[in-house]
Every structure is written in structure tokens, then in C-alpha cells.
Image (tube, rainbow, N blue to C red; front, side, top):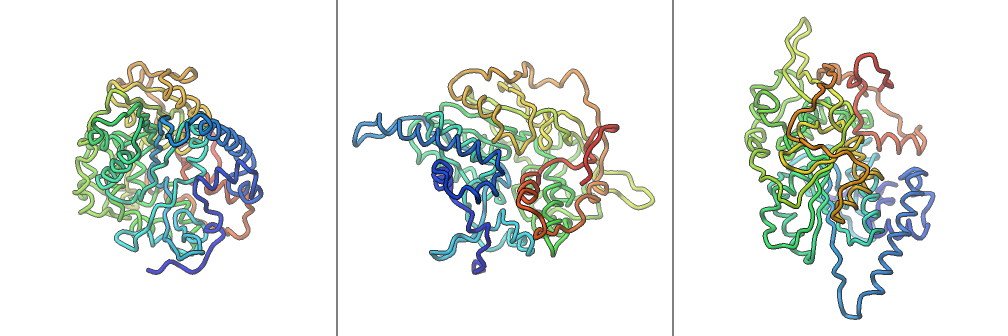
Length: 448
């Protein structure tokens, strides 16, 4: 497929990280960038960008002519959905941004994400999620590289790509890996023997899998349903079956049988109605999580807590209206996407922060803690989990939710043209937030 000749406003607003940092530090395109980030985050980013620019200039002044700085390079590895994807166009046209361009979503073009299909290239990490962390690290004097990648693909392929990129950097390296990126990093670590690896921080990583992958394949995941509300041509079930079910990475994220209580990689264990997984991809992904090596001694992790999160699954019983698909157990012991039981690894130093999964990389408290960990100190303001391999003393209150209930959310199509810039930004920023049914019984929650 030839990249579309239509250049959207989101294509024109896309800049790489270096361009964004320079624009923010210089105060250029202020109105446009405020529309992208919102006023509060824009002010924070502009301040960080100025600090980062000063730190870069100061480091350059202390490097002898002809020599290279030997500061640690911090590599940020985003999670699933965390890298922009698109197609390149001949200059001077900007790349055709597909993920995440709301105008392409409205036009029904998310089907271009389906595999196999036209090759897409990574176009940098999503700035809203990862630019704050990059700037905090640069302001602290670190060199920073962001490993953007095609998150749809098999994670074993991603392992080789990441290993090659890390070997090419040279010098001391530290890694901060968010969500699915942490699984790729765990698989990559044995390939880095002999490299000067200083620190690896896992950030909200689903080490035993994530039930959100199940919901994405069923069309009940909040991201899928919110995208479908924006898509004028497709509903969530169609996006699940025609697009998301083609991603090998989703199948590798499915929870292991020991945790789920049954084998989610067996197509016979899935409900007979509703969107179905690809049986071949299920079989290929079986055992992936169990095959990952344990973290090395230089690893630690930060986990999100206090958010209503799927912590269990079973097939719902058949009733008068037929099966309701999967039934999920929701509690407050996780970050909204990754349950604490999935994140924890025996013997791995772990700190907890009350934060939602997608906000972990841009949260200021998390940023401070990451800088402390990179400096070899324990986070001063976060709680350390002393026995992370053991279950918590108090069993959190659980709420049952099934696919049919979740399918009642976000079924009204949005009129994007009638939404103001702030409403548009908030909608995109909140794609991953939990649905109202996750709330504990008796608590108040806004309608979808």
C-alpha cells in the first residue's frame, strides 16, 4: 500500500524527541504543543526541556576537544502501544502517522495495523507517555535513547533488535523498561554478557501476563472500545477480530496457566461466542512467559498500586441469554492493567507507588525514584515491599465483571469535529483508564 497523500494535522504535529525538546526549550509552537499536552503538562515539559538543554551544554563544555563524554546512557523501552507507527513518505511530506492519529482512526484506517500487512516503521515513543521521563533524565545529566519498536510483532524478534541496539551504544548503560518492554528486556539480558550494564529498572511489568490481552482479543478492553467509539466504520468486536487478534505480542502477554487456573493458550478454553483468538498464534505463544530468565542482580522494579485491576478469570456460566464470555475478578491490588501478583518476582527488590499503569513513566514521583535508583540509592518516598513473593496479608475486595458487561461501554460514536482541543486531548490521554464496572460495589464512578 502506498502511504496516503492526505496529510493530517496530527502528521504535521508529529516531531521526533530531539525536535520536541528543542521546541519546548525555545518556547516555539507554544499554542500547538499546549493543544497536544495540555497547559499544565506543557509548562512542566517546557521547564524540564530548559533544564535538560542547560545540562547538555554544561556536559559539552567539560568534554575535551576530540573526546567523547562517558556518561551513562539510559535506554527507555516502552510498552505495548507505546511507540508511534506509520509509513514514510517522500520528502518534504511528513511521515503518515497511523498509531496514533485520531483522523486515521475516525476514517477506519486502524485496519492497516493488521498483520501481515503493509510494513510500518516506528516513529518514536508516544510523547505524552515517555517525553516527561526522557527530559527528567536529560536534566539530571544522562544521555537518553528511547527504543521505539513495532509492538505488534513477536517478542522474540524484538529481543534480537533490542540486543543489537544496546551493543551499538557502547559505554555504561542503564535500562528503564515499561510494561511489555520489561519482558523484552528480561529476554535480552542473557545476550548482553560482558557489557557495562549498570542498572535495570522494570516499571509496571506483567511478568506473569496481563488479562488486558485477553480483553483486547475479546473486544472488551477499554482501549479497543474507546478507539471503536472514535472509528466511524468499525465496532470494537470487529477491531478485536480483524486487527488486534493478528498481533503475536498479545498472545505472549496472556497470563500463564498456573495463575489463570486454566490454559489460555488452548483455543478450546475460550468462549464459543464473540471475537475469537487465532488458534495458531495461541499455540506459538504457549510457554513464552515461563521461558524468560530470572532478572540479573542489577535489576529492581517499581509497581503501581491502588487501582482497580483484573486479578482473576474464568469462563462465565451459561444463562438464559447464553454465555457472557469470560468473567473477571477485579480488586484494588494493581495499577489498573497489571495485577500485583503478576508483577512481583521472587527476590527482586520492589517499590510500590499509587499510580495508574499508563501514567507510571510520566509520574513525577516515579521520575524521582528512578533517578535515585540510577544513582544507587533506594527511593526515599516510596514503600518497599519486603516480601514481594508472598501474598498480601489482606485480601482486597473483589468485584465480578464479564465481557457482556464491558461490551456495554463506549458504544456511541464520537463526533470528534465537535469536541474542543482539551476534550480531545483528555480522551486520548485516558484511553487506558479502567471502565466504570471495575469500581468496588457501593463506590461512585463516572458513567462511560
